[in-house]
Length: 181
Image (cartoon, rainbow, N blue to C red):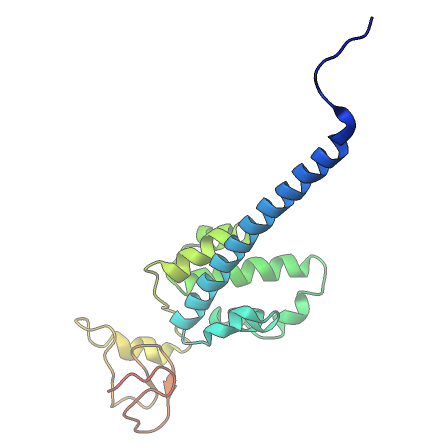
């Protein structure tokens, strides 16, 4: 008895190869799209903090910018090389980064596990950079309850109400963001 099932197995290897290559192509395209969205989100988040957006494109330098925004010391970069200490640094950086944009600790923890979702939320969303580097800026800002971003010319330490950068002398414009006083 000779059974014919109607399928030619002579191209079976080629069919599997085509399927695998197609699958790899689709996954690669999806990964590329997600990565582009992440980088643009990080770029926009950096810009909101008054940092150069292009820093999101450069490995290691983007970590330096993240540490600066999170107001953490740059020597934390060395801890990325130390086992178990790097876990602490990653969590600390993302939590502090999220809090500088008014987000919760839970949001920062979620950023550690799902950065491709939560970084674009900060970059594309309505979150504003609220990180303050010096307590005197906070006291200057809080002197007037009606306008929390009031520029106080009588203060010895002056800060831009738009981006929080420290100002030198009697400037008319912020050197970081260009805000006029």
